[in-house]
Length: 395
Image 1: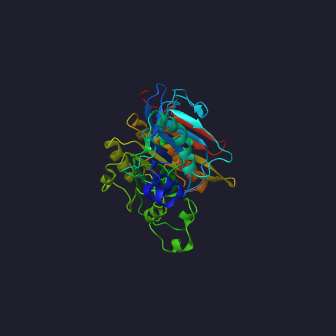
Image 2: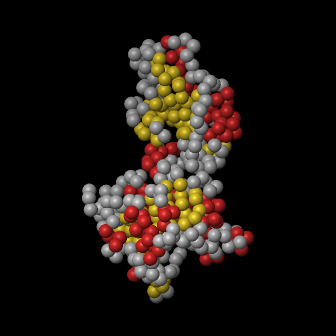
């Protein structure tokens, strides 16, 4: 993907053609081995870091004139700081991908930068000019290309995180091997959200067909022709989300005690399946694997001409599991789950249930702060009442 990005965009291609050591990492554009002068009048080398604005695989006008730099404050040939471009000095901002921004620069021409060639070369020229005075012949044009191009799990560059400075947080999800068990309304929305994260693999489990009623409580909008084919849910949803994420693995099976070994190797699981012995077998397997998981439930009732009810999210981690077997999750067959037994579902509440489940996953992985460390939450639609319980046994 990264190599193609440079071949398809004139501004990026020109950077490499003219000898600059540039690469795309995540949603960032880097220029490496840029010479500069430090306060002791020594020539050093640093990396310019810019956000990368894209429409698919095409660059757009840079969204900001600000540039980050991994290096000490650049100086002129006499060791005096280049204050004209100084924006933030001696910071330590984790940009993800092993990059730390130690300075930020601000130099905005009238009308801004028209493309990334102009932006990158302007800053490179400002900070490397004094270096060429101190050490004649030194230049940022090193005519070098990275040996390993971007091996992202995405089919196109994920620049949503890096452009707002949370790339380092997103990396906490990288390498995760997620299982989503059950692809009904809530499970399909969980897939929608997880597919937008840099997890390594997403294993989806469901043996059912994707039928008409599924279309009205799942993300996306299938065509009439697609519905006529009655595809399996895992095949239909993999086809949709593989356009974005390369790591989706479809399992057209209903998990039970006979095949739970398919979960070997996963690092996190979402359970969006009916109550019953099958769910108990899955839970026992995940506990044996020491894998954290989140189970979801929904119970809606039609009362006095309007719907009302409760959404449930129950987490189980190695830090606390006892509550799962003390009534928080039902393993009674037939789909009975106490107040969660009703089979009424609507897309917005399926989505909300999935949102709460994914937020809890991200809390467990320290993407979001989690001061209360609750492991059981219920949301009551009437009054928007959110209650937490079953906090971790250990701090």
